Image: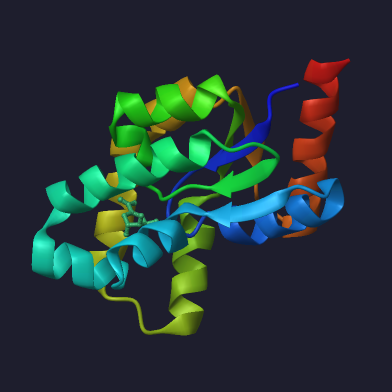
Length: 167
Ligand code: SKM
């Protein structure tokens, strides 16, 4: 059994919610990579993007991935774009089992709508991102688990999948 469980997937796919449930069920530590990045930068992710630009954010993300991957006994919820750098996925997979948490885009959009009025631009962007990234999520995920009902159920499906590989 690898030492970490790593969740990859789109922003809004439920990685943090499902990850926390998984951590509770397994007794592993929960780590949110976006929060690690914000701690390291001492500013929020939107601030990093607007003040330093995306390439600087991706460099910081890679540094955090390397640090977190070196630790064990964690459920790691990654940022949606972690799959954009192969080095990230190499580091994460060396010490972790990677699971793609797939959630229908309509559900992702529905959730955003309940928090704030969704701009047409956001919906277009999320559809575009999904189409661009789905190939990478599937490539790197050892399993794909659908998060299409309750997060509890997605966590159970992940545990079943892990039991299968560790049999
Ligand atoms: O890591 C953050 C950041 O906003 C970038 C991102 C993405 O590229 O999908 C997702 C978030 O989790």
